[in-house]
Length: 284
Ligand code: NAP
Image 1 (cartoon, helix red, strand yellow):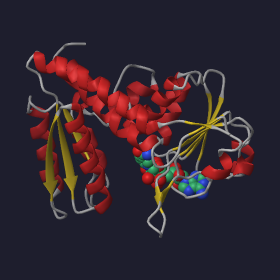
Image 2 (cartoon, helix red, strand yellow):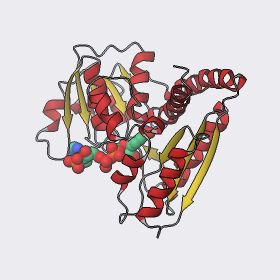
Image 3 (tube, protein in one colour):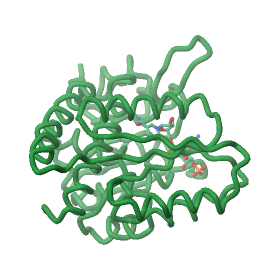
Image 4 (tube, helix red, strand yellow):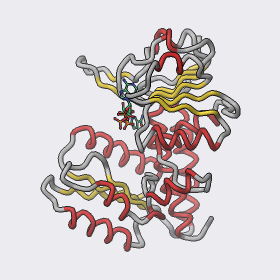
């Protein structure tokens, strides 16, 4: 039976440690501040944003929300980002996705000052990650890497298979694992015979968004399984991409959903905000 990687507890510990760092900053008269931009009325986004604001309260940093209507023009969104870039009291800027389709999210991400890009989506930060330089790593992959570290799971020389190639999860994870000397394979919707690939994985990370996609016959004994997926079933129950009950019988380590990668994502956002603040104040 697998060891359960407890993301909830690790996230709590991470935020408690960050609170200590934030208290030290406050003694120097510095209070980190996160600006969150939300465009339109997306129910899931509202929940994510509420969780981020709660985390800010917990860590003791300031938080300001900028709510823009569905019909906002691209220029207005860009103007707001530029204003926040200029504002010295703001240390981190986050644009909650999705945004309405008529808007260009890539231009918006590019406009965020890369030194305030706590989500790690700016092309400069993406580029720095790909050449192994210190940067803001996007929060979900960063949270997964923290889990490996905490549970002493060494990736060096391991076969890591990632399911999903999105810009926010799969691709940065590929870079992170490569930087830890893993041999990485990334699968997507056009990959042929996924099972043959996943069965060779020492570490399997699933980020595709399909309930029960990863079944026990797709993994080998003692595999480490990280489930990034978040899927809401018709019953309202939230599950990952992995058939947890059966895969956990074969795995050596596994993350649950909920209580796995999700809480770590928000903790790493807080981590990136504190890092951004310290860098801007030339404290690191
Ligand atoms: P996304 O942008 O929709 O990407 C999904 C990826 O899965 C794509 O690369 C897609 O391939 C691939 N895929 C879809 N169906 C597949 C199949 N049958 N076989 C193989 N690959 C398949 O999603 P995302 O934003 O990366 O999110 C993925 C999941 O993680 C979602 O459930 C999301 O809710 C969750 N998530 C969780 C957190 C967290 O904090 N825990 C954070 C972010 C996302 P193509 O590229 O070929 O289309």
